[in-house]
Image 1 (tube, protein in one colour):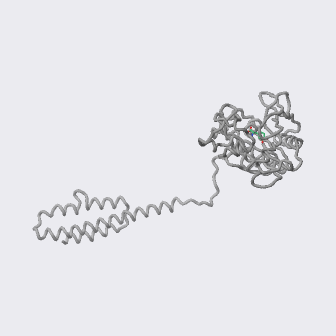
Image 2 (image 1 turned 135 degrees about the horizontal axis):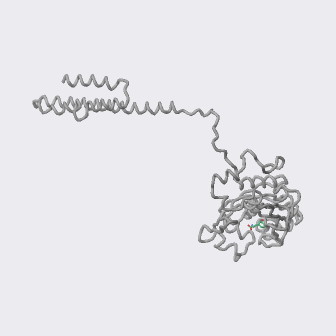
Length: 355
Ligand code: DAH
């Protein structure tokens, strides 16, 4: 019994002292290891008489339980202490100034969207948005596109369900319908965004970007359309003199329809916009078809207007001399370092659009 009492006093004291986890571990071995003090006492039980054995064993078990729970408690205290120390020592001072190790860059597509938005906002266009996942009605039917039109083909359009009702929009033109349905004319909007078609090569990507324009008011005519696009092209390419050509074309949602080409030449292996005898197509446009206005609850006898759709990626390639469209979407940080723009250099008409 005195053995038990003295062990209890001695080890309770030891465990409570200022020790670390390793020291605690050795105390545990000293007591409960193969030749540990408690283990040995258990082994000696066999030398005692039956009566003594009973009492001694029960006291020994009590001691064992006491010491084990003391040790476990100490272990968890030490662990908590360790975590608290870590939290204290590894504290971050969030008020310290940041260290920049990589300057983020603006992607040329975002840059061009900012530039174009700035140009059009100066002449009264506001920005609208529409969903990437469209339904067949807004993307085709409301835009006067007949059931058998080739654009509706599975080879061109990504359909999201068997009924062909949900799809990834193939152009930004459905935003025209959404905009007109949600308020009353006049409308003067642009809508930049992502568009999708089953197509992929050096100049086509399954996901690309367009900018839609729509201007509806009383007595709007083709002259307004030409004026607006001339202004845009000059501002965007930052040249005073530019050759622009309107070529007759066909779109179901406009009548008449045209495509716009700009003149260019190749000088020292580089594209030079505005001069020369080569032509590059940059957008589709036309006077909004009366059926489209009717579908959008606008009376075509009172209101008319024009619309246009520009390929944003194409504009970026032309202006910044990037010749593979697919590189735009490869997420290569070195490419972005080279072709990207300074985030603080926001394009505005008065400060200049680009570097
Ligand atoms: N949506 C056409 C396309 O993706 C481009 C277009 C042409 C838009 C004429 C228009 C337009 O608004 O009037 O090819």
